[in-house]
Length: 155
Image 1 (tube, rainbow, N blue to C red):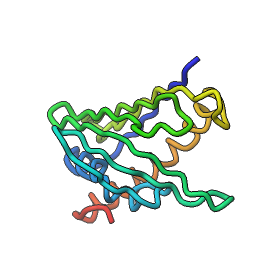
Image 2 (image 1 turned 30 degrees about the vertical axis):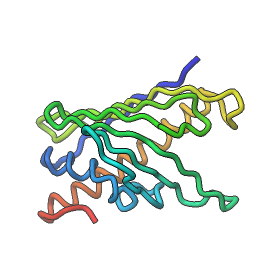
Image 3 (image 1 turned 120 degrees about the vertical axis):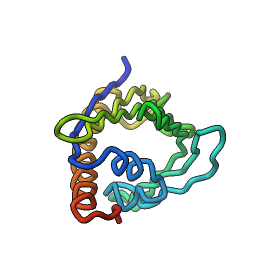
Image 4 (image 1 turned 135 degrees about the vertical axis):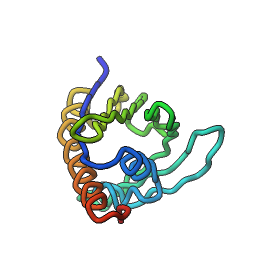
């Protein structure tokens, strides 16, 4: 069995602001509450390879991994996957941005499978992602909408 999540939120801001803000990887620690670091390692043929690090956990451990992200501005979609998979056999993420009368519908679809030796199984990780993703999406929404009202950028 593999894990799958599908979450979305509508952000009341111009699509270009939403697109630019959520694709500015070095600024992710200011956009997401869970990341302490986001470092671009390389950019090649439209794909950005980067390292993300979380804030230290309750044991002081900093979890980090490398992902590759390919944004397509013409379709307002992004495909991403973990390169260093850690506890995952694989982790693929699809981001979609769609203009609606109420704002930009930002959708994240995550497909993954946990390794047998991982500390949690697919169902537990799916539950964890379905709890955390809406929290992160709400933070992003609040920050981008505040920036849009102020006529500025996030951060």
